[in-house]
Image (cartoon, rainbow, N blue to C red; front, top):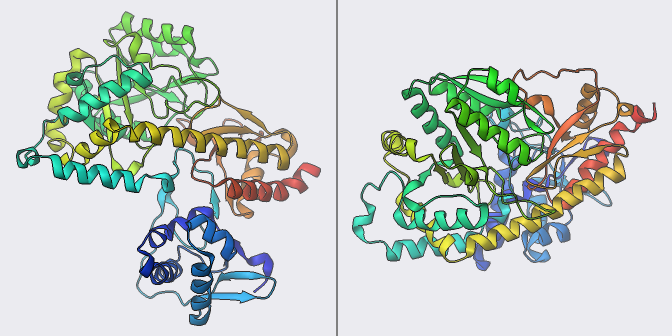
Length: 484
């Protein structure tokens, strides 16, 4: 095999092996080998992937080097891996399985050889940081504590003990004005927006304004509820309030603490103007506080909702701090909409799962959630710093935009690197996926297709060493363009 054809190990790939590494010691070696075999057979470790050294993988997994060395030796003997003196160890080519469909991966890609080795996908937390032991303890505690009667259909607003814990947490950390009876536990922010869409439609509204650029998934949720979405242009100082006033909508969804994806924070004047608009038109501001806990240069700015609880519906989730797969979030609607939201929640699913609610209540009450937020804060800040440092070293002239917060940043390439399509193509050729800012515009089209690249880079899910290698690879790929 030619060395230039070798694919590099993606740091996220070791997460496939993490459950095996956490198995009981007597079975750890067997399960690690089994996880490797399945990853190779399924294509999740693609043919030609260059594996890390046994020392590096052992450090990442938190196991002994001997365990990894033994696994490599066994898989070499079985033909899953190939090794050459001085060239490393990589995944061998296996016959394609017959009759097995290609599994779609997140973002519409398919698994296998076409997948990028490193994807700076924004919005993805570090899933390896999920506190398995703490969550298991909270879940066991909930099972021991809950009476049988608590396993009946729950209050659609959520378990009282969880609403009490969340109300205290949100008031303390985000400045939200709420009491437990005014909070609704949801299956993430997606359901919160869906519930609000149904309530607004039922009250005769047909339009909702969404930030442009912003999250494309929001439009699908509101359209499914019967509303038509109109773009709300966002400038460096916040939403275009004149455009908002003229669009006819009486509801607007915003991300004031850390605009997605531009990365700006809405200042005092913008906040006051947005609330004036809501007051003047008897409208509703929907605040998506998707990563408000993570600010790295100062204390986080409090939620907009605290300024006008009667005009702002506040929503958030644990998707960035624990894991999206938990499907746990919350909605604090204005008092006028509360009863309708609770009824919409009841009709939608009869309430969130009781055991998960009880476990999260215990997780918050015990202080574990605060510790998890501090851990994520430190880790995400380190990875943001690693990304900025790598950009400075390998892509000189690239400007980082946005406040020091959240799970992504904007990288603005100077014209010397060539047009955006060339930058994206060169990065893809180096095995790195960069996502242009235009992916988050209402039209999905780049207003300046021949202009310099502006990319949205997510970093929490990538280890610092992986960030370094990926940016270095992009730098090497772009050097001919830059030199030219």
